[in-house]
Length: 352
Length: 186
Image 1 (tube, chains in turn cyan, green):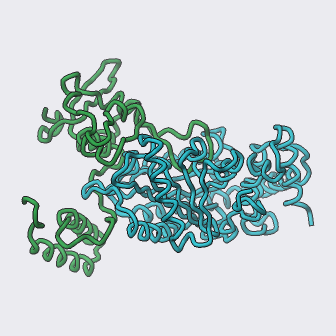
Image 2 (tube, rainbow over the protein chains, first blue to last red):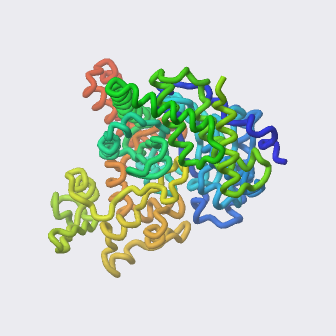
Image 3 (spheres, rainbow over the protein chains, first blue to last red):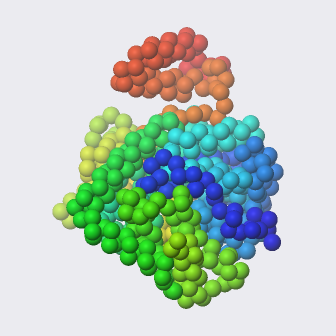
């Protein structure tokens, strides 16, 4: 057993429990800096020998950074497929890292709030996570890792274009700020397309965590900046803070208006969802997303007793297929997953 | 070729649009091509796609393929030989068009013209204003520092932060007085 996966799932990211700013609406914020080594081709164009050299070198240096002291170094290739899947479900590893694990690695801080992906789209992706809506805080964290990195390696950098990245969409700062945001009020009010299109006009990418457009499930959206060049790091984080901050205000007012207009309807919807997760024997992931979304909305409106902080975020993670199989200790058929998911939900939401 | 819109800068982008079913072709510089989309002109096929698998990737996939295929057209056989493969890693513009990724840091030099056009579209800017890897050796990257400081000055004035603006103005005067760095031609 690989030490990281012992005592799973106790090792779930405990920073999620902290709540954080605007945590009634924003689940988490993630900031990434893309960096490359000057003397090597980008990972997709590098040979196995080159990738191995890069991985070996970085795997020796990165775990010595103070952020990663007492943390983990994971060689993706050494992990079982389901372990990789669990890391992806926790948003610690990207799909690219999971799909092609050879010479790919992941360095994690003890609390899983900082990470470095080795040989993802770029040689180095420095990542910091914060609970709730905190782009500036996460930026500070990731820049601190970058300052250690600069002592160790010569990054690919051009005076006019900044940090050079495999994709021209990341060049300049290499900075990617994103938040996972829960917008059930705007979805129910039918305002969501308008709001999201406005964000797209402002050069942000927006997509449903599950599904797109009218088929979006759980009202969960990932919003991220698209512009990485021509602004400094603080300005990118501030612009994100300002524009996504407006969405948070719209969402609050949409929720309040919906509840004021039809309190009984909202209460009925929320309590039906709570009853479903307390009673189901078989439940799909998509259905779970919808009910958890309603319960989260209900807790935010005060329709339900306040929930334990972070519990919904944790359940959203644990009800995914990889986590269920990890908990069961074996692969599960589709129906078995539905049963395991229902059992998890019954346990978490058991009536007092 | 000169940009057909501003008539000043070199054209590096071939903008192809379908207007009433007719193909309308324009040669533009990076700046005007960037503005074309700001002006609300539809750039055919230029879009940011979501993750087709709908997974929970936080890295946003985007597709340059259509953009490159339809907007930036290689300027025929002759012109393509103007952009040889990257001499460091051997990557070609054609490979870039297929993958949306560059081969190595030196590719940014090798494919500079078309890349500037693309960067203008993606970011609306083509100059880095963020941090540099290490505290710059005094004078070594003076043009970049100067540019950044001038932009910061403009922003400070726009924000009516005159205390900061005065400080930045002094810094610009100081940088200008240092003169060009050694070993570079002015």
